Length: 167
Image 1: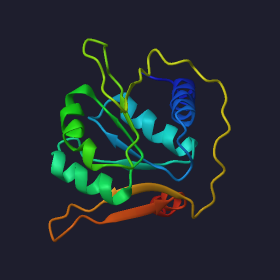
Image 2: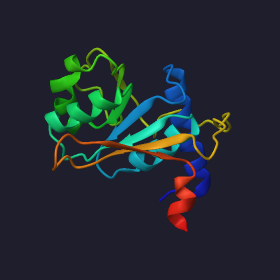
Image 3: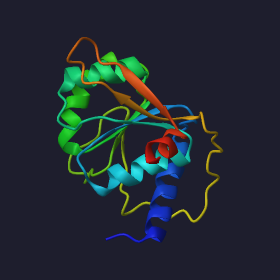
């Protein structure tokens, strides 16, 4: 269970972590994990720091993952240990991918180049951050089509789409 204050602190912590890596507003940051709390808090943390959240289905294989990450020129991916083999299988083909953030690394096996451990539970709680000032047309989310009728296509959403979808 999480409170709204927990959500504020945890999303601040994730945004702060991403910015400290040198990630910038407009960078595509993939979320490739099961439905764990880090998925949701990570999504909001990405938006707070001005990044573009790129959620991908955790059941994708390496080839599906490669196609989408390559097309988007994704700069970072947040994932779990269980999905790390899929990412490791394709990382050499992704020159734009600088950071592989492993949210549940327990230290039992050494991480490789570009891989960074992050624990939401152990991360410093950040009270306040400067949230990136967005406008209605600022990109927020990059979704991909299934690719059943050809190459998957990226559909970029903007911050205003949240309101338009509500209406």
